[in-house]
Image 1 (cartoon, helix red, strand yellow):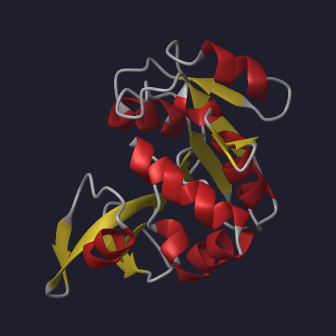
Image 2 (cartoon, one colour; image 1 turned 135 degrees about the horizontal axis):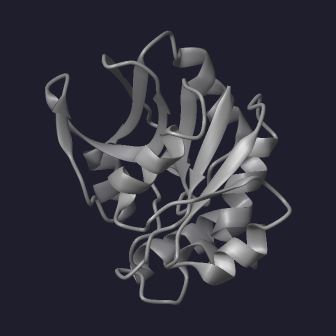
Length: 186
């Protein structure tokens, strides 16, 4: 299976330049996510960029195949990527800096057919003190999508993970502070 690394958004909520290049533990988030995905069982990683991230595009150029999306939003950019890469395809956002290859592999193992959305309990995000931008009800509880998915067919399966590494999407300065602490470890 191939993967698309979504890194073309403006990152206005973080307000620290190009979001994929924001450093956690001395390394750009996009590099941390790219390492996790390339160390997994994924065949090829494609980076989805846009006109909003010229420095990120230059940073990734020559390292992975690039897909230039219009930069009109996540859904539109993902649509452009899916026109290029044959599905099913793993999708992952560049602001998930604690992602690890074993988490990607567990997601691939959980995928059976159609589409898979990986969520964490919103209560986990709240306990960690990180933002929960989007929530949805599942199994009688509130969950938050992580930005790690498999896009396949029309039907969707939701997988709830309790892995705190998936709960930390860096959207705000406070999220970045926690990611920095967790990335550096004890």
